[in-house]
Image (cartoon, rainbow, N blue to C red; front, side, top):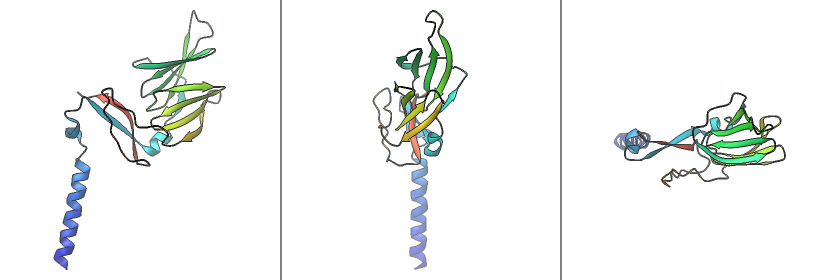
Length: 164
């Protein structure tokens, strides 16, 4: 009986070792793009407004709702630009939203993707008013690679970065 118990413990430890080392950096060695993950708990607290603007690095979609222009920063969030004076637009702030690729505005609410979740963000109060989990599929890499993982998981794919 003791030998059987030792066998199962050894088998379980080998399984744990294989599972924890299967997604190391060497796993991604030949990939052009590497998935970036965020803990589910961190993702749910990640959307916020920063009054200090950021430089645009990888702009995506643009949305206009007078007098503001909203420009998506791929996988990072949304730039907020006051366009009251079109001759002199002013970068007003940034809505942090990891995994964000798209947004739309209705009234004073911006609807945006926070990786796989849909978030309603009140533009006047500058806060999240609602979150619906697991609405969207995980973001696909620029080369159309997917990294499927199960729903209701502990870590969520929020971006892809170019592999060195």
